[in-house]
Amino acid sequence: MDDSQLRTVWQQRQKQDRAVALAEPLATLMKRTLSKRYSQFGALARLWDEMIPQSIAEHTALESFSRGVLTVMVDSAAHRFQLQTLLSGGVTKAIQSRFGGALNKIRLIPGQFFSLDDAGQQRYQF
Image (cartoon, rainbow, N blue to C red):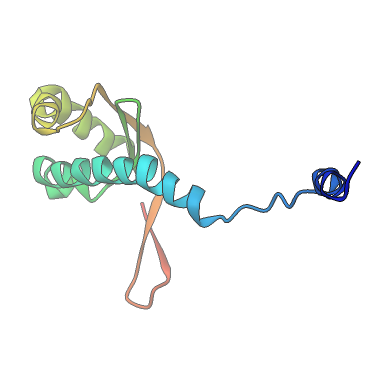
């Protein structure tokens, strides 16, 4: 073997540095996955604020949007009943027709959520 072949074999046997810059995969994730999900969720939030009366909307929180199912958290059984009645009365179809994506179902779940008060502290709403 000559010198160049030995050098090539030596380089191939050296441990490869497997470090990859994190910026490239994160940029791809943000561009392809999260930006689409964020824009769809934002559009749904705007429609939700337009279509649901403020007295009910303040007791709800949009939890997630996945596979055509919008999950909405409602803080009490009474408000959940009011919202279910409102949605079954045609508001669901109105939201579906105005939404650009595929909204198949609105799922209501019980839960508690909080907002921030003037001092920036968590203030639970019941």
